[in-house]
Amino acid sequence: MFDHILHEEIVESIDSIELVTDFGGKFISDNSVYLGGFDKNRQELLLIEDLLISGVGASKQSAEYGAYIMRELRIFDTLKVHQSTNITTKDFKDIRYGGFLTVSQSGAGDSLMDAMTLAHQNHLTCFNIVNVEDSPITQHLDKLIKMEEEEARE
Image (tube, rainbow, N blue to C red; front, side, top):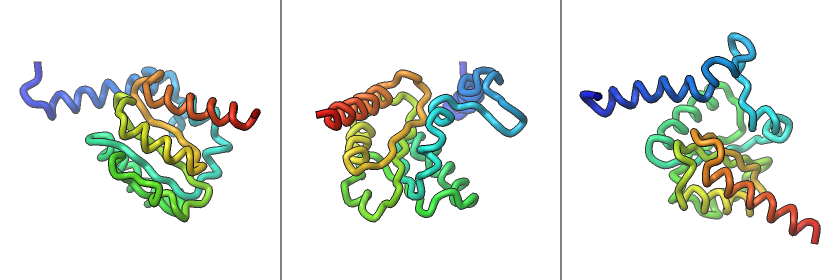
């Protein structure tokens, strides 16, 4: 159907925007979009001062562009983007009021889940941008939070 992979990527990007905005149904105004998970956790996310973003492949490239915009807007005190396979405990050193964001198209990948586990163990607020609502990484984060809640009750 497509003459080149780039053409396919452009068409799929348009489809992704339509899906993520629920074909325009999530627009609150001309410059605001309702994003369920972010809006529900707004107060906690506003506390983040230092953000570490992780992704793989094209998702990492998207994260780099998003980080560029966030740096221009001076949203965070520090902002780093890393390949999820390269993240170690040292990356969380000296992070205050930290956040850890994974960016993924599929929401799958052991390296993303391993990096999220490290971030969660280092008390960072973890959240995802993913194309699949009930993705493996979302389920993984839900398990980490549930385990933490159970440990707190004991």
